[in-house]
Image (cartoon, rainbow, N blue to C red; front, side):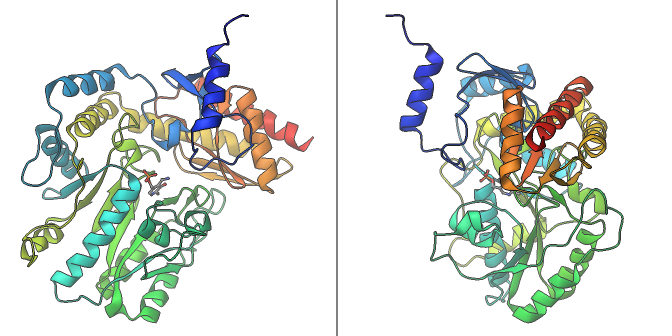
Length: 433
Ligand code: PMP
């Protein structure tokens, strides 16, 4: 008998042995990927796809970028180490300094983590410990938006609005309260409908003296690719200041060019107290994430009576590989002009999707900013059909319930954007015909 094709064997092993995160059983076959180059990936059957969702929104430089691969292999051969318990390393130090510079925070401090969920978790611990050290130990309540997503570790899940994150996982940690999500789409952008007053109402209802922080994503990602209304972040910054509440901006998904800017919150000119970063930081090449904060908050931990420092960290915090890769990613974004490029390609993507899809049967909304677009369908079923139609046509998009997320790597070109838009148009027409 002829040997079994490797694709079939891998698909069978995948079905039998992998416990797939965030994947409904029985929807299509798993994509067992074997290689990638530029914006394309190839599966074990030899099919090639345009990756219209950048891995998990993180592959901002696409696949096998020579510069990133070189930085990774060079550091692997040089030093494998971390940054905690009294030691750090050259890439971690240089990266922290570079982030401070990029964020316009000359004395900004960074704690490195391994995932966005860990960054969320670290930020929760930092804001609570900070208030306790400043004589306000009752300031523990953490507020977040009703449609937010901040991760799946237990506290991050307790904070996330999406029931997918926490249903059936209780008892959950206490002290997390949800605030109504403000509305915004591409169509109503510019309309004055910030809805920030809901935050102030929630702070007052909890008693401002009990509230530690408000966490917010500039564009709700898992919540359906929903950009916050213009003015919202500025308004919540003022409200937080008025009540001594820390503002934590979650740019795990939006950071590093996704929205056509280095950081989405800069559009509103605000300064968060803490910022969580992940995905695009190391462009998906290694697991890596971060929390940045101000010198003032960082210095407060010197007064910790038990340690005289920040009581937080993991075995692989500040991994030299993650830091070396991230430095190469930031240099590449800068030298290849990828922020400006992402902004231009983002206009083409959001404009194309709005023109071609907005009025199609079954489409309820098209929205987005930069290379972060969402198409909302009338049903989850239709969104799934369109996603599978795109996959058959060689384009990967991502499903967030009834919303399809389109977020190609920043290196995508105009012809590839047009192919994504065309493919979505055809798949949507087929799913409604
Ligand atoms: N915050 C946001 C805004 C996210 O979108 C995600 C992941 N989708 C996370 C945090 C959690 O990151 P990770 O999956 O790396 O734990």
